[in-house]
Image: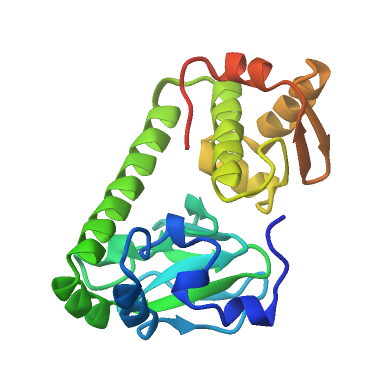
Amino acid sequence: MLDTFNVEKLRQSCASCSIQELCLPAGLASADLERLDRLVNRQKPFKRGDVLFRSADAFNNLFVVRTGTVKTFHQGDDGVDQIMGFHYPGDIIGLDAIHAGQHACTAECLEHTSVCELPFDRLEEVSREIPGLRQQLMKIISREMAQEHRHLLILGKRNAHERLAVFLLGLSSRFESRGFSPTEFQLSMSRNDLANYLGLAVETVSRLFTRFQEQGVLDVERKQVRITDMDGLRQLAGSHCES
């Protein structure tokens, strides 16, 4: 779905990173970029099913997704997982742990994934000396809060087909902003995870994909999705779009 793992790409500095406009370095001066780059730990790639952190782990680092996809989920007292979100290149994971000092959810890779690890104590120290970095961090926190708010709105009063249509439009927008096709992409999450995230039964999600195909809005082959009628998908979503 996303960039194939490439060792040279992992060695890139923040200044030459293909997702820097989606990440902390956006808008920073060259000298500040170099200073931030010295903080970054570029981890070896993770495999599908690998965990970045678990719920209740002590909070030490933020993680920026470079390639791949990560899901975050919380396990309830009944042992049932609740999917909190799906995270793509440029997304920062772990922001919700800052206030409590420990993670409230688990982050699991859905495919081969590479991340940048940012030690938060050092990031906080440097951000006090680089106003642009602190401002960018605040923008990212605000962006995460807005996305969570939009998701809650989707689950609040939207019917089933609106929920799926809005989700697909949101994915389309996110892929386009990252330089990928907005009309053809692969769903890295399972139907079960997608249904969980949208608050629907997995049978409902499967029926909706079939219906969208019959209406000429989508072509679906396993996890590969092609949007064939963007206006039609927008109509199914109503006036609400997730990005």
